[in-house]
Image (cartoon, rainbow, N blue to C red; front, side, top):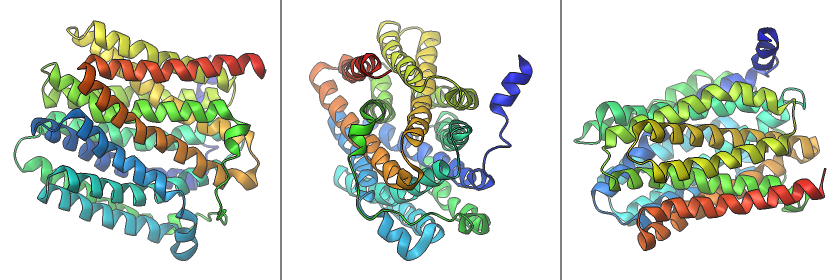
Length: 390
């Protein structure tokens, strides 16, 4: 039994370039995980309405989604390394500007710009991980890469738990974490330049939505839940009189435990029915909001709920991307991955705006309602598809 488990999580079969790209993903996750959590908490303390916080968060996703329409042109002109380097530089400038001009308009515009450059890097790296993998190790490779960036997103909020959000120190940390990504990229320049990205399609093809509708519905809803949680869970908990440090620790625990599950989830993705796995993790997304709502006075149940969110959110991305890679031809992977991320980011754009508006209308319970509605919808489609397509 132990030897079988070891074989599942053995990373030797993963292409070495995926491991180097994961280093960059880790530091990106740390920087953005800290920054996004800090921004939401500061905005809430400055009495920004939940709908405004949702629009700010959604603008980053809108930028990510928009980048899919021209990422191929940029990569053709300057390549992966320069795209990553320039993207990091501009994102750092945006962060500095936001702290100088901390108002909704500034936050929305700069989040959008950050999203554009983040999206170009993200789509290229996801495409590469899928292309250099095969059906025997694709889930494992994507799980490894996805774990790296998610580990970073977990470590980032931990700094909130340690340092809080008062004073200038958190702002200095946020800017410092953005800057430190530059020497990280420079250190792995050779490895990044060795990543030969196939020539990308110039024209997006949304016919993949018909080929694998459940995959795209699941990742759309996953995007809604991920962004709604990241943007509005802090507001929800502040409304319940939890401190910024407590919220930081909750994010950290949920994401870190989610990461620990990824090697096993990725390996199992290569072995068992992916549709059933997707449905199972969508059920997780039904359970944790209900627990959070009814047991808000129990710290143990709250942490358990956040852990379920972390496991389900990370796992759904890993499984659906691997499932897509299995369903399309290698020559179509680059464009299929771009469509996949655009759909995911459309969910991340819709999520916080919708949840924020519902929270303003119904109060804190609106956060729970918004998540349950979308999850029920995706589960219904998944179950119907399971009967139609065996």
